[in-house]
Image (cartoon, rainbow, N blue to C red; front, side, top):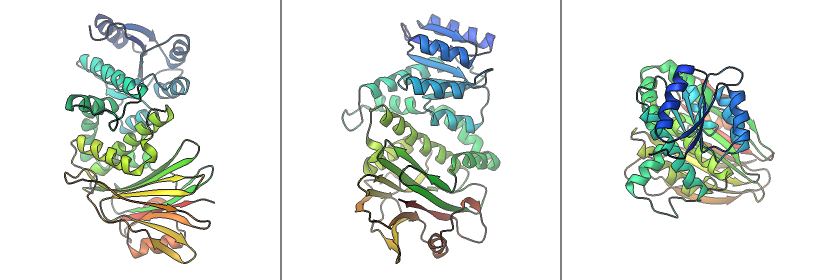
Length: 382
């Protein structure tokens, strides 16, 4: 049987659903340990070895998300699947952000969906532990699809995309949870930004993260079409990058600090999603020890600058195809050595945006009908 010998920790407080799923998984050959809440689940996780964890989001004493977060700190190599009756997109975002391999929504009418999710998650975990990457070992079409499905449940995400397309308020709420504060302080650098939107949903997105002790990555994206699907594109983009961050932390993948490879990877994932979302994007990796920045750009519209006492110095990056285009080839790339007193900036080309940047007008994400949609972000080594 498919799950023969697989050890599963199932954390669920609903006795009827838990018994139904446990019986099904055991009939498929799995060994299932059941916990009724997050605290009990953590105890069992510490005491025994499991191949995978399946957890409800909403439980007494300790919920599924904080439980999974603590489990990831203990052993990030054990994949986790989150199941919930709450189909709010914020739960999808948070589950993927903390490292969950998949997200399923109750009611689950076909229990074989759970089995499929388990096998996909285990397959991805095996690839990670074997340090396999697409560049090192070519995959056939079936393996490629399995790897994509292991990273995200596209069935679930497509269902939520339909919901976002119908509800501007839902899309707005998703973005509000994804955007960082206007000022992000890192150990040896900081990020500030302003993004302006003219409707409920922003077609622009920014983010940044530390990668290990010595690298910081930052990116700005512009999604097309400029409608509610842009909120979903933020979810996809953030989750794809979070998957790479998780692999980096387990020493399975170093692509995150290679802008050329990352934009190629994001192109494959976005195109493979089948959502027909095109992304103009600037992606930058900075070595905080040597102050060397590798800057890559896909598409058009977004511009990169060095800022100093004399103003903004454009960084020459030729236009190319956006992420998701069938004509995609490769991004434009440049490496720069940053000097003391220089800032690294990404932004839209409008004069009022550039002036706001020069005036240090950093406001985060705001609604402003008096200016163009878009904005800017700045890296400061102070």
